[in-house]
Length: 315
Length: 315
Image (cartoon, rainbow over all chains, first blue to last red; front, side):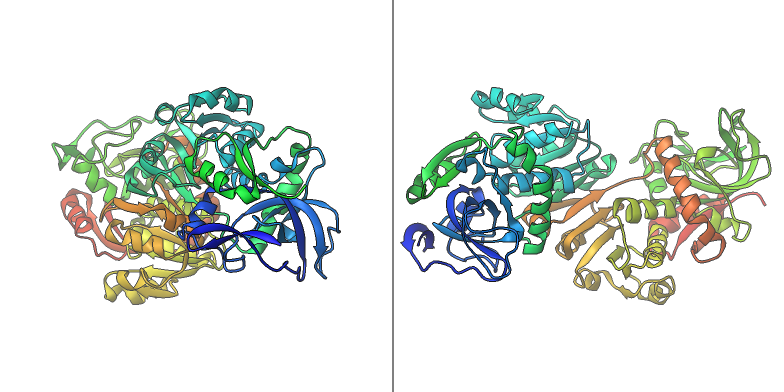
């Protein structure tokens, strides 16, 4: 098969042996695979993949059809349409996915959306609902709201009955964010002065972090998922103490399989029907043939996309 | 009546009219009142009292007998022994306590312990159990464990089945902390290298904060209650992200009456029987006549006490 391969900090489109599914693994013929900021960091050597993932093939999410099943797989059969959440290896013609982190891909949605669903929605669900304890009426700020996780988070928070403010740099995307459910859409400098917020989903990081902390309401939480614009801050704990506020930070990629499996099961039970019915959308900013991954990676690196950047294969 | 009164950053023992209980307030003849670090900050003008508390009389906790009851008070009567959690005004011969933040003082314990119970145990319970979600087996570090909140937290965490490490600077107190339930007692530099911890109760602050963050296990929480040694830190969020860890900070004094009432009711239901039976103790480092508050405040300011410093009145 062919796969993207990281060679000395660059991506190549190279040939390697077909993987063989072991245990409860599925071998999936990839039709679409999302490109995430973590992939760019990994290619540059700044973000080592988890030890149980392919070390030189990037890609955290995919959709495709089951090509082979391992001897312990029980839930999927050859030919099934699936989506998978993996620690690496998705950006290839064939990828191994343990069936515990696979979901049936609804017939109703296009491959490119299915390929960009898992990482974005699993991250947003885990951050907002599990870690943030989001409940009806909560005042939520989503920063970097136009991105893959951002658009997922805005939709989820709106569906949960929250009061959603989306922070988006590019004003040409503001109307689309309102369509996705945001009640207020603002440029970052305005959003950072328009609290109080019960929950801030931080997908950007950098100099606005302190402003966001200062806008937390009583018992508010800053949930840090992305810090591409800067990961350090000078923290004055007395600010947090006065509000009984907190900072929680998280990543999804490094978690062990059993934790991802628990999250994927919940996503399947709670979000899959809404994805199938079109109530939850996976906006795709751009799709590229996988052999032209360089263009896709450049697009993610430039930023300013509305939704996901996806690689397409086969078909 | 007489009360301690803050005059230009100093404490005086002065005369003022007896307070009159309104609504559901009790007028309590104070027998003992704890001195807390917050009182020292307040006297120096660094920590304004909450707006509904006496502005110039310090003291956050007391024990005594009910002298009068307000027209809406239903749960206590004149002569009852009570303990109270207040936003100020406790360090006086007479103090107003809303009955929603009063508990019956067990006959079995001395006034000096009853007077130092409420703030320490309410703070420790709220931090460890409510905010920290402490459960059986959790690996807990309590810093500043010899103090009033620290000795309460060590006992509570041990009673909850946690694995308790106490960080105490003075080695002469280590044996006593083991008697109170700590499984390991260490000097701070050792405790800060002896994780992982699921929960760190930070009662000190300052240069050890970053070390404590670095010792958090997966999904660990740093709960910040005291920052006397320094409230600022240079926070690297990627450290937290890798562990899915968080920082939560809190204070008790500034909360509105209804929140304190909810906490006091829980303390009454869950901890009062154990205080009466002697399973939970309020160690008292020193007790002074209230007219000699200067000595008591000096003692708290010096630090290095095992347990509470208490003012005594009447009797």
